[in-house]
Length: 67
Ligand SMILES: [Zn+2]
Image (cartoon, rainbow, N blue to C red; front, side, top):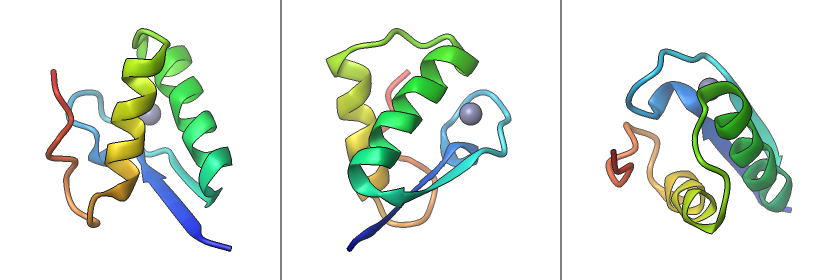
């Protein structure tokens, strides 16, 4: 089982301390919903793809996060 981490503190913009750890599919879904409900981002495939790229990045600031 692969452990996937989403660290919202690494998303440029809002200061947020939320971290999600778990199975990849669960983390991807939870991170998407978190960004929509907490940060007001637009739900959909575009956001989901950004989350996918983000969790696949090395543990540093999310460089591919587009504003
Ligand atoms: Zn957050």
